[in-house]
Length: 355
Image (cartoon, rainbow, N blue to C red):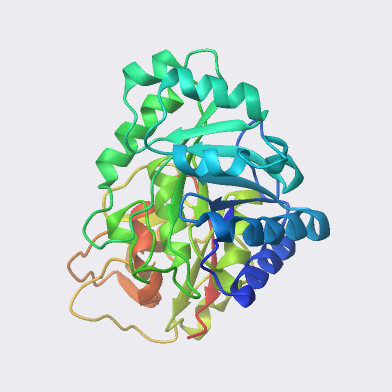
């Protein structure tokens, strides 16, 4: 996962972001970038008088911490950047190795900027169409989705997938944003998601959903930091593919579930995911269920199911009570939606939820 800093951030926020990058690196970078510590930033909201000061912030981060940047620019902003004595060299001296070209750049202009700057180019994956991509054929680019500061303007999941496929089917990498969990960015401070439904969700839930919708996508935290545990779970997923599931109400007899990762069986059953190799291992201390076997609850087969006794099921949907099963715990409420984004054959790790 990549992170972001901006001219409007407080110095402490920028420092916290860079520290989180350094603590969790290496991170997967966009294909072909060679940058495992790239941050996203924006220059097209910087006044001419502020550009020099923010440029020094970028230079210091690049020189002292080894980070690089993809800078979001408009035609006017880029003109300001290269108008000084340093010209195009202003970018490289501040660690800017990629440019996201926002509204106002045609295909010919994009090619000119790529050649003059020596930067990798990203285009707006939320708005570009197939015809425009065909005009850029042969130029190495990324598709970098928008974020949406105003509530109710973010993308739907289906549109995100459709737009992303325009790029991926042409072999072009795709990046998309999730909101941060620390200080939210100005001017509205209401989150910067690509997907509208993620505006107020935690970063781990949002990350897993984006990787399910577009498995090839590089996820970018749009603002500030994420919680340390979420950063750790994301790093583990990127290294191993294991999905962390915080659980509550775990029966004492089911503590064995916390000792190792578990593979979900490959069969795509409608009611539940079955945890492989759990048969025979758990006898709950008591039988307890609510009004139903709720989505996100962990159920264990009892003696009534014979050779299936002890097999653990993670419920995908609400189902009627079953005398042959007992509830032994459940995914914690902030993460229950991750159940919708799991897929057969994945590996999960159950951990106690720390509120």
